[in-house]
Length: 446
Image (cartoon, rainbow, N blue to C red):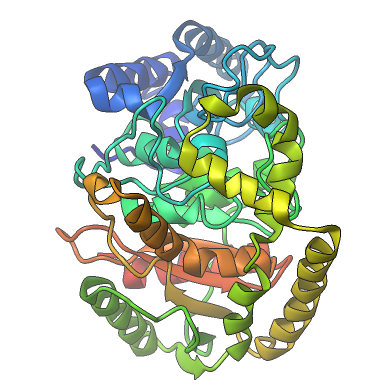
């Protein structure tokens, strides 16, 4: 099922062709029809509150008030965002007995203020600590393109909720690719803004140095509409940008290594189409990218910062953690203050150097992930889980570390399994990147 875009749904509401209540009922019906797969996509549904919120939005619209294009539309939120009155479990059994949140996370509050209606909380990798999307506690939702394959993570349920046609917009987080990976593997657009563009208050952290909050949706325009709301900015859609004369750099270090043939073919086709449309594609060494892995060899910022946040919960309820998540968090316990400062200083140096290296380009281009969605059963053994997880995270995580904004666009041919084209912009150039992505989108799409 393909959900209409945010702009299309908003126009239907404006034209009295539908109501928010009908949209919410349709979303809940689609979730119910999804059976076991839908059950694994959500950790909680808000059926009655969503219907009440929809009725309120319909009353406001009849009174001439609709605060944004999101007003009256169904959305999903990842299970690590606080919602007043609900327990934030972050995909974990260890938090099941926690006290309900007293207030909404800032990102959720902004979406509600814009009139969006939350229909449910989406499943995720426990504590957001992998790019796979597997969850042994609440089940692993299958990829809508092939339910035997992973959806990607950690915002697994977020990606499925949009790709399966339940909602037009999902709220996710991205610390090392957790928005862009499921977007790529599920055939969606996923936008990771510059790290502090959207308030993190009320979102359970993985790494406060790297966490970003952003949308997954069908189109760049949908993501831009949501980003403006999340960033507290005025309503905005990307203005037209011509591709002719734009300069795109394709890094030759790390990001093209080990590509599966299908991804390499789709990427080559995307670059050729952009070149034919007038863009200039330049190969750039970007040797700095090879230094990021060694800089994080002891676990990096996520392990150190997660170990700090989880220290008491691990001591009390460590047996309830997914062992594959727990071992990654516990790596941070072995890092010293010297190690942590060393990573932070190397990060600052690499950010400054790559800023200089890429200053002459409008964006970087590369595959979002170098492989198609693996089968769920490929992750049965720990060694293969680790290998595939590192591959899934590799390209995306580079640019969390470098504090760039980035977006994944579908680039597969019609009928093929989804794959993603990642565009990376400069820190703070979020709107510029969204405008460029809107121009690229129709050229590389199937």
